[in-house]
Length: 126
Image (cartoon, rainbow, N blue to C red; front, side):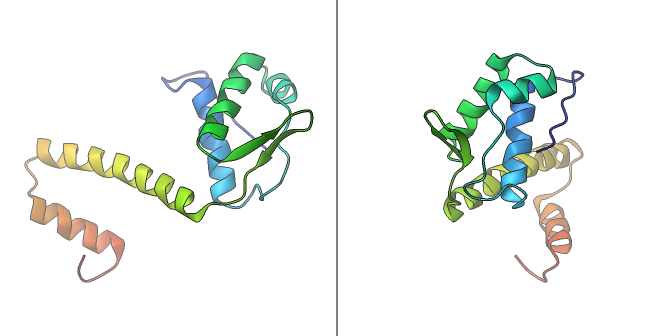
């Protein structure tokens, strides 16, 4: 499992880890039941605090992406298609909110925005 941490920017390290592990799971690069590195091993490999990796793993577990088996470690949780869809929808909403803000700032109408989305989505109508 390869995770790249950037110390520049506003995104906290635990959130960078969380996002990247989610991406690996959603893309199927980490399979259901696959073991994740221990918190200590990941912290050592990334040269960060164990507290940071613990926070990332807790977030992943809270969101249903991983499960923890006491004494054995953390594993990719069984894929819940509704969970995957909900996460994707949340990310789409974040991007669309940013697009709406830019459109409103530039006085782009809702119809123009819909037309652009329709073209980008590749369908004749929404």
